[in-house]
Structures are given as structure tokens and as C-alpha cells.
Image: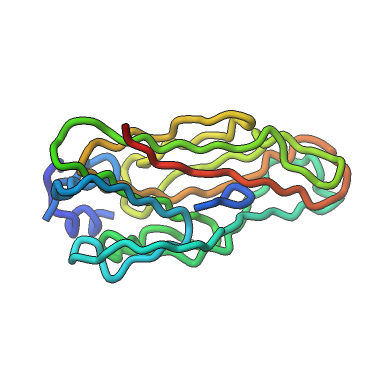
Length: 210
């Protein structure tokens, strides 16, 4: 299936808070885009694009910080994973407007790395603090995990995983002149009996290129 146009590929088919004519890889939604002036773009949750990117849409800045939350009742404490929901409203791909993610269960993550040539790659990373905090009480950030997917993807673009907490972790290498996107569904492990409270923290996603 490698080399199918985006439309055919499509037919086949957070964090507690976050700061922020092509050939396709048949296993995940990554798209080769035209080369050009060096530029990076990334969106986590709600982003801004003036029209579809594959039709000449232009990325814009969006200061929205979306959240994912989970509420655990006293009776359910320590009883196993609890799905988190997001206040992000993004379901459609900014690349071609395909309905890619499901809300409120998934957070849309996408972006691109453009360069004049074909050498090099950008790195998508996420950094989270060691703990979620509620007053003087804490919960390890590694109790939050995500399942990666997207409608029509045979294999997720961003691998599923858990936050390390207190360190930066690599999520994806993005080759020059490539668009990528995925949908992340977060969950809380709920394997302990923490003190009552509202525990919060922020994970920051970053796309960088040398």
C-alpha cells in the first residue's frame, strides 16, 4: 500500500494538561510533503489551520492548553485503570479533514518538519514532572499512560506508552519533509490509595530539529 494517495489511505480506514499530493507509509499516518524553507509545526489537542493543509492551508498559533481528566470514586480507589477524558474538540485531521480521532476519549497530535533538502529529522519528545500534585500530596506521573491510534491506521504513528515523569522521553523521529499525526487516549493506572484531592500536573510536548 505504500505510495497510495492520502484519500485512499483514509478510506481504508493531554497529560493532565499540555502546553501545546503525497506518498504514505502504509503502517501509520505519515505523509511526505514538499520541501521548502526550514519550518516546524506541532499541535496537541486544538490547533489552528487556515483550511486543509493538503489544499494549501496555513498553520497558525493557538494558545489553548487542553486537559485530560479522570474522576475516581472512593469505592473504586485502587480498582484498576480509569479512562481519562479531554476537553479538546478536535476530531478531524488538519491535513485532509478526515475524521481521525474520537472525543472526548482521544487527543489529536500532529505536525510537520520541512527543510530545503532531504537530510535530517526532527524529534518529538514529551517532558513531565515526577509527580502530580494535590496540596502536599503527590501521585507519580508514571501512573498516566496513553494508547495511540487513529481511524484507519494499521499501526499507530506515535507508539503507546507511559510518562516517565521527571525526564524527557523520545516519542517519534520525524524525517525531513514529513507530516505526522496520531490520536492518544490517556488513562490513570488507579493501583494505589492516595489521599483525597485533585491532582494536577503538566506534560509538555516539543518538536525540535538540529
